[in-house]
View 1 (cartoon, one colour):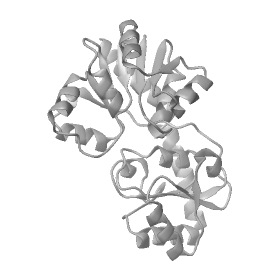
View 2 (cartoon, one colour):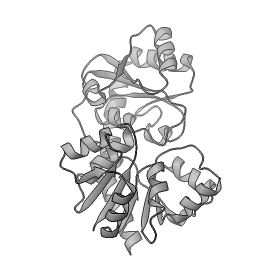
View 3 (cartoon, one colour):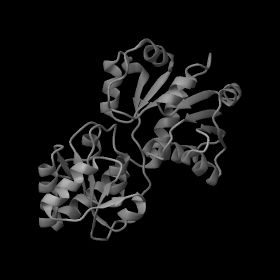
View 4 (cartoon, helix red, strand yellow):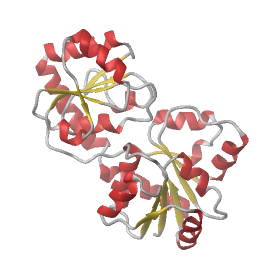
Amino acid sequence: MKTLHIDLGRQMGGGQWQAIYLLERLAEAKLLARPGSPLLEQARARGIDASAFSIAAMFGAAQRAELIHAHEARAHAMAAAVPGARLVVARRVAFPVGTGLPSRVKYARANLFLAVSRCAAAELERAGVSRDKIRVVHDGVPLREPGRGDAIVALASKREDLVRRAAELAGVEVRFTRDLWDDLTQAKMFLYASDSEGLGSAALAAMSAAVPVIASNIGGLAEAVEHERTGLLAANRAEDFAAAIARLLREPQLAREMGRRGRERVEAMFTVEEMVRRTVAAYHEVLG
């Protein structure tokens, strides 16, 4: 199966890592990425067939592909312009779909949408996309060694203001990570505060490392994290996050048990292999 993958993201976020994990496991797959982007560099370093995106490169590669997979919104807009191409589109965000004419045209163009969560799928349906054209394909994360340190880790790219205030109220220090997998090896707790989230692959990464998660009770995070089982869901208030931090510090056995169950949940539902299996099954649906 010859597939063309397009991702024009500027940063190396969760969606870009999902593209890497997928492409490493597909034969005859070609990636077009933003020139100079971390994704393009990472893909080339891993031996993936990857080139800098241009309109000419897209049309040329599309002629040799059976199917195009657009991994984010800009890629979707570009790929929708390729006439006759079979198009699969990833939907990784939980905010509403645009209702303007350009948005309606490009959404009508896709053969199938891969929603990262039920929450993301519901937004597509609210925008008028038929349920028959939506498949839920969760993110997958590698399984890593359990975290065994004492650090309280959080993402620097999310609600840093809320987390800093919560840490102040709880009387703890927080490490804002720029190398998530490395910091998780030294973590005893992971904080994920966000205003909108399709699923939350960083939360899944923490669960993979058996680190309990305290996350905002919004969007797909409520699907990734099981409240009171793999972590705690909190309202987006510093006081609520601080109370959750204090509870896990006060009950270390509960925190360890949540970490263990989080690891089991990833093994059952959120592995890279399961993500690839569901994605390839969706490709076969489109190709018939």
